[in-house]
Length: 123
Image 1: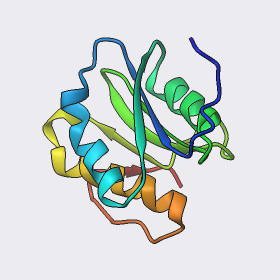
Image 2 (image 1 turned 120 degrees about the vertical axis):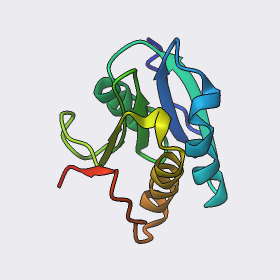
Image 3 (image 1 turned 180 degrees about the horizontal axis):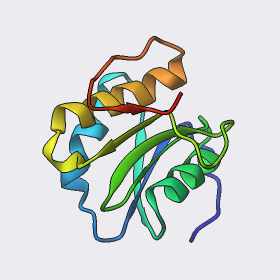
Image 4 (image 1 turned 45 degrees about the vertical axis):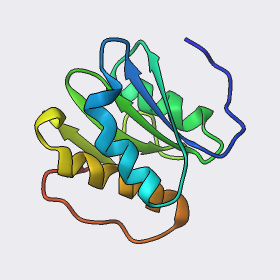
């Protein structure tokens, strides 16, 4: 796993190798519609470890991790076993994926989150 920190101000989205970027396009669109760049990369690990790694490597301290089970949004300064939002069965909820992307960007910008009943909130 590449441990290099991306210094360009981007939100990082790390997914397991076999997950297609196409399925995650709503997340990418949600981030981009809020005016922030996002980088998609394939890595190995669980959604939690990928999100934590992405948040630590992002210059914006915001990371998203995806595996077969779930997609999570996290922030660098919260414990590694916690998250801000989680969505299981994400492939069937493109609108919720978009909302997760919007909320990732809003976390960076300090704007209020958009609510979505499908997104599990950790705290």
